[in-house]
Image 1 (spheres, rainbow, N blue to C red):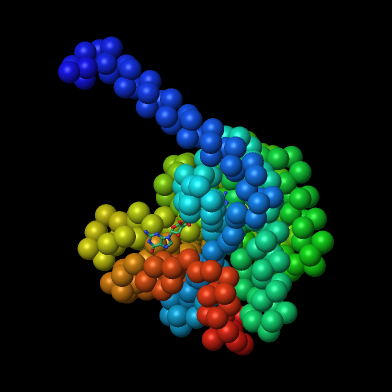
Image 2 (image 1 turned 45 degrees about the vertical axis):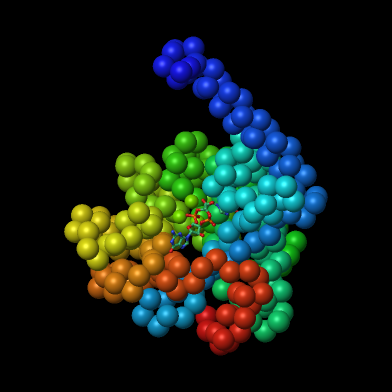
Length: 281
Ligand code: C2E
Ligand code: MG
Ligand code: MG
Ligand code: MG
């Protein structure tokens, strides 16, 4: 059988490589048209105050529905969009849509909660990123304190100084800055004291089964201490069980997000949920 020969392996490997790059090229071509063809939409996942279980924020999650590819998960298309730089246009579209949606909810008499938007490294590394965001805020008359920008540690760490300046600029206008997937990235925590930050989002890997995992408990406890020391808010991501929630409560984590409380929702589902929250925040 060919598998037993070196050449066979190589042929198989090449075929696989060819298939992968073909799939990538196809996806890239379709991504380039996706905004114009109106194939993107947003989902919204509520964040809850743990004690009162009221909604205190919303994370915006991008979705791509393509005729041939179906609903493509962001974990698949975002890397392709980043490598081809299409993410710059997509990211701008997400920011603008998120603002428009929140303003529409406000006009409909629903509470305008802070919207957390995920950013790619490429977006933040543009020299005029802060101006782009400020311009959008101005154009839409969108209240800056209703926007939270989620970055990962790696986004901050490469190109640290230009990014630092941009974030300082944005934060001085009232935008909140959040570190996503906290604990999975850079191990040098010095940036916590140098960067203008508001929120740490504890990665789901530390939250899953925390009630029965002493090592995860130690890590989250240390993160709680860090957050107190640097005066940062904490959000626990990916809460799926009541037992996890109870444990997070005992550690003093205040904000939670996860399937237990709500899955990512469509705009109309989110509006319905916000309707039951009138008067909050
Ligand atoms: P993230 O920002 O860490 O978002 C959290 C992910 O965890 C989301 O996956 C969400 O649906 C999922 N999640 C929430 N609660 C639970 C839970 O209880 N259990 C489990 N197992 N999962 C949960 P999603 O929507 O597939 O997004 C994946 C990643 O794609 C996001 O991770 C984010 O890094 C990226 N992404 C999503 N939207 C955008 C965007 O507009 N721009 C950029 N640059 N990245 C985005
Ligand atoms: Mg996020
Ligand atoms: Mg992330
Ligand atoms: Mg995350």
